[in-house]
Image (tube, rainbow, N blue to C red):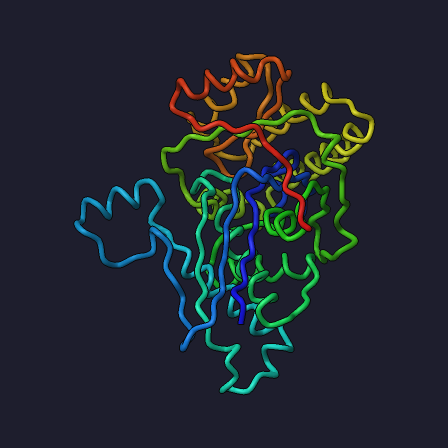
Length: 333
C-alpha cells in the first residue's frame, strides 16, 4: 500500500474573530506559508509517531525545557488520537473492515511548521490533516463542512479545548471564505470568496510562546454563556462588520477593508483581554502606515499596508524580534 500524505494550512482571521466561537460571522483565509503535514504508512501494527515536542526521553532536562519553550508543552499525539476517534465513528468504510484487514495496521505521524500558540490554528491543522489522511487511506468521502465539524468536536468535546468553528471550516475548505457560524451550521453557512480580491496581506508574530487559545477564550466564553449583554451586542456588531467586509471585497474597496480590520481590533479589545505584547504588534503596523488585527487568539497579527511600504514594515517587525511573512492564499486541489 502506498503511503498517504495530507496537509492542512495555517489560517488568518481577517474579520469577525473572536465572534466565531459564539455564533458570529467571520472572514478567514488559509495561508500557504505554513502547514501541518500528516503521513500514513503501512505497518505491522497501528502506531502513532510522535513529533519533535511529543517525546518522553531527552538528552537532558535542559534540552527538554528548551524544546518546550520553543514549541510549547502541548503535543500532537492527543490531536491525532482525537481525530482517529472521530473518524472511526463517522466512516462506514472503516467500520466495515474485519479485524485482520491490513488497512487497520499503519503508522500515523505528523510534522508542522506553524508557529505554535500564536493564533494561527496550528492545533486544528493537525486534526484536519489527520482526518484528511484517514479519509484517503480508507477511501472515505467526508464533505468539507462535515469534516470541519468533526475536527471541532474532536477538540472541544474530546480534548476540552475552547474553540470555534472558523479555523476548521477554512482549513477544511481552503482559500478565502465568509462564514455564518450560528448553529445549526452546514454547507449553506459558508460563502466562497475570490482570494484575488483581498488587499496585500502580511502576518507578523512574536515567537515568545503564547498561551493556548482555549485558555485565552475562557473569560469571554463564561460571559457569553451567562448571557452578558455587552458580549451579545458585540457579537452582533461583528456580524455586521463581516457583512460590510464581504461587500468591500466585492467592490475592491481595499481602503475601507483596512479600516474594518482596525475596527475589528478595537471591538475585540472592548470585550477580550488583549496583552501589551499583542497591542504592540498592532501598533507597529499603524505606526508604519498599515492596519492590523489579531489573527486568532493572540500572539500573531494579520495586516495590510501599501505594497511599497512592506519592506520597511518587515524591517520594523524583525527589529523587535518578530517573525514576518507576506501572506499567500492556500487553495486546495
